[in-house]
Image 1 (cartoon, rainbow, N blue to C red):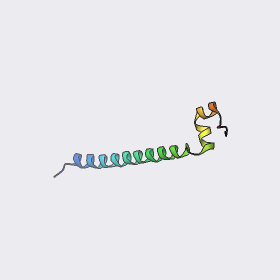
Image 2: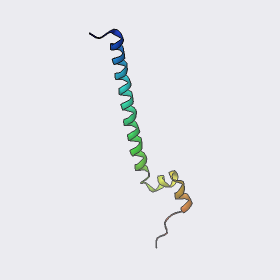
Image 3: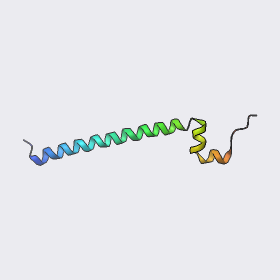
Length: 60
């Protein structure tokens, strides 16, 4: 039989685990959204400083 301390610790650790998993999932979603944003030319021009330094591509 578990003591009161062990029960409370298990409940706390379960909540912490859920929060950590939610944070990891959120970070993965933000990473994917950021990488997708880099594929859009107007957004990439705003986010990536080297794009502004190099300028646009000249059709040749």
